[in-house]
Image 1 (cartoon, rainbow, N blue to C red):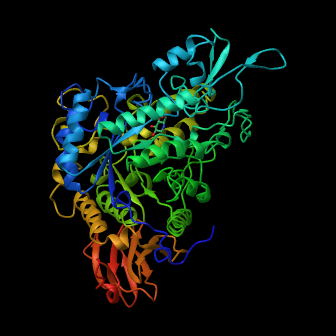
Image 2: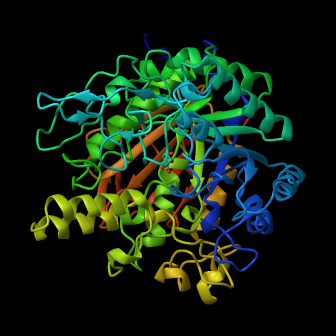
Image 3: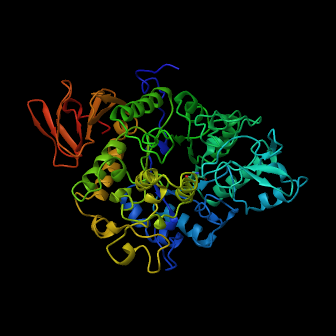
Length: 590
Ligand code: NOJ
């Protein structure tokens, strides 16, 4: 597929409401507790709707609130049509939808249909006997036997939360597949009745007033039915990453077209989570405007950039050149070919950006938060902002012990490491440092509302320790305060709306692609250009302004505007700005 140099003129960049929207993600357990039990809840979200509206987003995405044993914080659903008591009731959901719609905001539910909880009635039935009508709703396979006659799982796939991806069921002498925890059995999408039940659930929520879905690991639903062994990349491991056999598997587009047809008939918003697929041609089959599958997807290229050779919790220094080629690849490919990007740096699975890729020191944290807002918020795509990102919240402090961590991914990883390498203290120290950089727990500490007890998150005992930084980083000290990360994000989101043609629909080009410190790009619409530049370093960098660029009219900056002398811009620590080129400032639609 070739890139078009003038996609807008060729009418390949169609306008759509969901392209112009920005999304705010809420992790309900950690957002706001309204009843003092220490867990965030729906009442808490309702209390904060005006805060969200003030920020200037258009949509909220709520992580799962369905009934769940909460082994994986709600990504293990035991009933798709009930609300977990921890969060409230179905009446609260109705109130939330009404409150959102009254403010002109839309509502996305998190749809988890690659797997359910093992407590779901469907699985209870399925595991009850081989003859049960639900048996085929999950993935059951016979054991393999090795040369000594020992029983083995059907293949060598690993689970993302440690160990084999297969769990043995002695009652039927079969294994079931679970790509995540053993309490999260994978649904069998080959089974038509199961698919119909999922589609019925989707319609049920849309009829209730939900405006769309974020679809959890949706590209894993179609597995190669011969269940081949994964390629062995590390012979020291017992189980291996089998994603080549199920990430965008054989029937993925057929299933997504079935699902997409329903979503399209409701004009619903859809964003699919799609790990382990980096081929834009393949992703375009999902998000191409005429494909009617999903509006956009989350790809993992940026957030996997610092995963080392032995996985997420092994160290790797990321390179500016990698970041530039990733961003450039997705931005230009999608623009030129009628696709669309979901823009994100943080979510409930990713740590805080300022700590991970910049600095959370007292001197630099807010500058860095605003630099990332400029970097991300002015790109082409739909912006996703995760709770606390608008405040520049940081990772959990280094002095917190292992006993403070709560997430099963980190805890399982630690247990496995201590079991397999009990005497390797050096590796244990390095791995603990990595948890402080990349554990999912970093993003899950309670939202910092003010400097009161427990950051104003709860009047009770918080389920998860509040980050020590709450007295210096909280919403009360930022809303309405010029120069705060909150107000900066608000300005960025407003700018996107004011200059829709450029920032939503404009072309994207990397500038000075070889530069190791400065990330610069332009957005252009019908010859009208904005230059965006970001210093990713915590020291000054002298940047030679490309000769065809000018710093004419300042749109936004995290300093008071650029310092330039004879064509050299002195970019200060984490400085970021956007300037419109003067010749073009009169664009009528701006
Ligand atoms: C992706 C979700 O974002 C993550 O939190 C969850 O653990 C896995 N999918 C399994 O549902």
